[in-house]
Picture 1 (tube, helix red, strand yellow):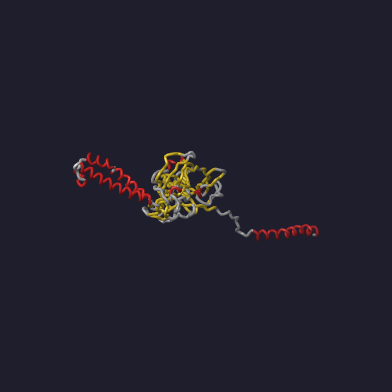
Picture 2: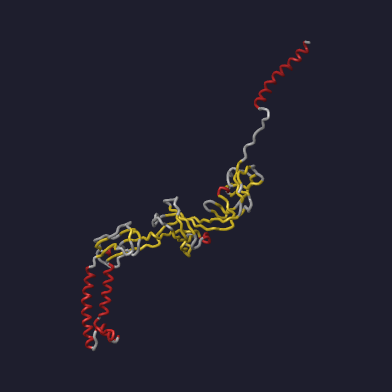
Length: 357
């Protein structure tokens, strides 16, 4: 009996020592518990199909007035008054300055007396020939011309016409409507002391002047639409059309373009810098959002989805604009392209499509 007791005792002790461990396991892992898989990455998908691609050529240019006029002094003399100032708006034909014209006016008066004297001499000559100046229409042209030349009447009248023209030039008027850019001359000084009086800018017609690369020349044409964004006001977009293309490539491999600019509010100023985007529609392109393309080790990659798995695909980009790429290699119509949540995806990773286009 004693031997049997001692034999059973260790077994009982062993059984008591295992029971608590069994209870801990039940509490730590309740009945029916299954380990949870991490949630699948949700991805939006776009079915690729040929569409029109808005090709954009991006450049920077300068806004300038189509028409400007440097107002000079065609007649010499002392400046009596300057009637405009920098920044003032003027109309075509408006008087903007006056020169002293005493000498010219005096010359015109003296020529008037000489012409009157020449006419008296002409009439006396014609009377001596049996004609009257009142009947000049009946006088043979050779006879009348000879008498006029003899008295120098045509020469004197030509001199007076020139003097009247010089007198008119002492009243300086605006040749175009616009804004006065800079007034250089000051009253009281001789006109000969200045290169010009001022410059007038016609700000009603503006153009953007900008370069494009020689390789981009095939994508531009007269009449093509452009968008102009001034650097000082990035949220404002102006529209225009290409009006001129310089037929020459400069030493930097650039071609100069000119585009008319619509500025109804007159917020643009000559000399402003602006970003220019040339718009050109190219049909039958495989266009994808820029978010769909990721860079992996220096190569462009997209992810396609098939049977809820992501597939890695290398692509080549043909063209791009501010929103899209036109893919030249690596995609075909009908591919289901992942366009979001793709930055950390890996090849053959399971995903869940949240939308389909």
